[in-house]
Image (tube, rainbow, N blue to C red; front, side, top):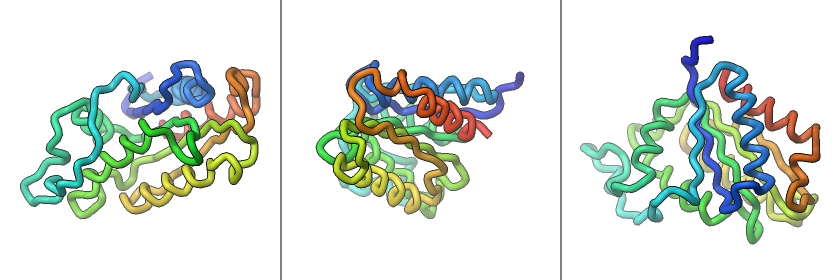
Length: 189
């Protein structure tokens, strides 16, 4: 099978076996089964700094963010990809600090008439301790992702939320695992 589609999976949990990471791994299986080449990046293993709000990425001659760190290569992979999946736990009523820092760095994708990501498929996986998306803050994270990607010209195509789960809950939930698999496959199409 020719792998002409690429999907980048950004895992924003500091826990390599947490619920969002387990669901992301299942999405990777779905994307690979659909024929995509998958690049998985754990933000906890990536050395990168926060957006400096310098706006140098907005200058005419700029080629993205001026920071020369781990996001530079990741940005190139995202540009070349057909799909992007971000998986994060919900911490303190929104996405993890790692996810927020990464999302802030996507501001540099707003150059070139704000459309460098246009046409890409974006998916989000969230895992929270409370089953209620409002009480857990998952709705805050969902809305942040929806707003940011709409601004960049590529609305979120799908989301999976694991709510109310302790460690290992996602792996025990067959329906949720199937949703994650399907999301990965959809990002590869």
